[in-house]
Amino acid sequence: TATRTTSSMSAFTTKDASGPVALLKMEKDVSSVRWHAKGDYFVTVAPKATGGSSVLIHQLSKAHSQQPFSKSKGGEVQLACFHPTKPFLFVASAQHIRIYHLIQQKLVKRLMSGCRWISSMQIHKTGDHLIVGTLDRRMIWFDLDLGTTPYKTLKYHERAVRQVAYHKRNPLMASA
Image 1 (cartoon, helix red, strand yellow):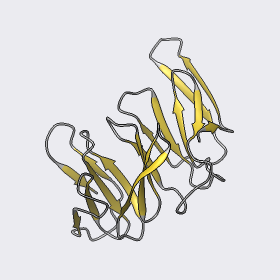
Image 2 (cartoon, helix red, strand yellow; image 1 turned 180 degrees about the vertical axis):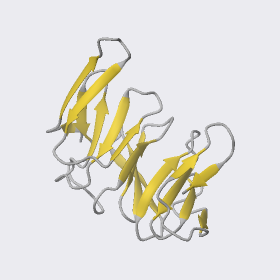
Image 3 (cartoon, one colour; image 1 turned 30 degrees about the vertical axis):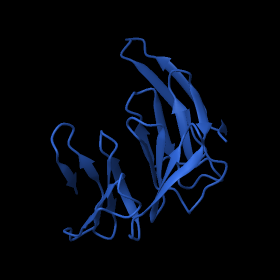
């Protein structure tokens, strides 16, 4: 169940009305921040935080934060991101990606990456594809309609893949 958090959030508008600003005070250092496609929600990941507070979902318009998990499952959380059209949250640990339904508050799917350490992930704007970068020099491509194992594993890098991305309009993906 989702609960209130120990983090404090203040949301306000700047004097020059350039837009809303959120100031967060977190228990531990935040390693990842990802926005929802609609722009009112964002998720933060603090891998060293205790219990389930390593993943927090914040609503900017209400200056409200919630903890979607009571405890951390499957090891230290590395990354989290929202599905662009469905109420799903993708949570990556070192080797697996779990997909949670935020309304029903249950695990939908567990993706098996087959890698040692996930460094980055990006979901396509349609929500059908997910690419994952790993520290063991791979880019893993999941077709979310096909199953829990990778559609393709690309092994063309000589060093760790630190970042992956989809092009906004064209059918392209990139890794670095």
